[in-house]
Length: 268
Image 1 (tube, one colour):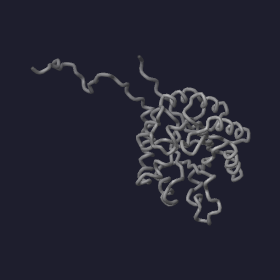
Image 2 (cartoon, one colour):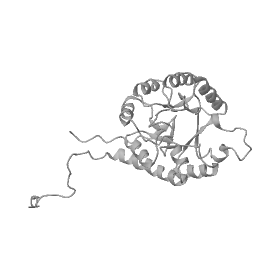
Image 3 (cartoon, rainbow, N blue to C red):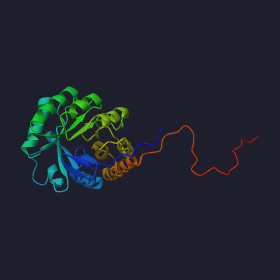
């Protein structure tokens, strides 16, 4: 076998905008907006996602979540979290558009117990919203066939789940992620299921374009420190992917030259 091909370091572009950070961070589940704000800074993220259907838009000035997110610093990515059918997803999406956002993370879940994507509902909603002019970042399961069907809609990104939302299990099916990466043209981001920095590094080593996470930072014992760890892991994983790791071997391979040394002998 010959040497592996070195991957091309393509820029991270979403809906025509180039980002330096490949780490996208959510804004839910924090103990306070102040902690959230500090964690966002520590993560180095440039895009933050907000569950618009769960935001209190009537909060007093200075107390709402958007008062803690600097629009000059971050791209705000509204999402349809909490939608368990197509109509709810469309309602939240259209609310988002009425507030001036064209970029949308589409999420249609099957049920509240598993929080897994509804593949049929996701595809239906994506087709409708594509026709309405949205730039869609589509949360989906790790099915390569569905990913290819969604890719035909020319989305801003396809975002397969690494594992169930908030589970912290890491990437359960890396083989499917690899197939998706080979099969679609849109940027591919891992969204959901990650638990710690090593999960993020592994995701990036697979060659995905980025990761989106919320719970692993927000519910860590020290969210700000974990945000910093996730930033470092995302960067390290990307560099490791581009550098191309050594192949796995059954036997050891000496780091130093062996020429001139006496053959190893067993004692006895």
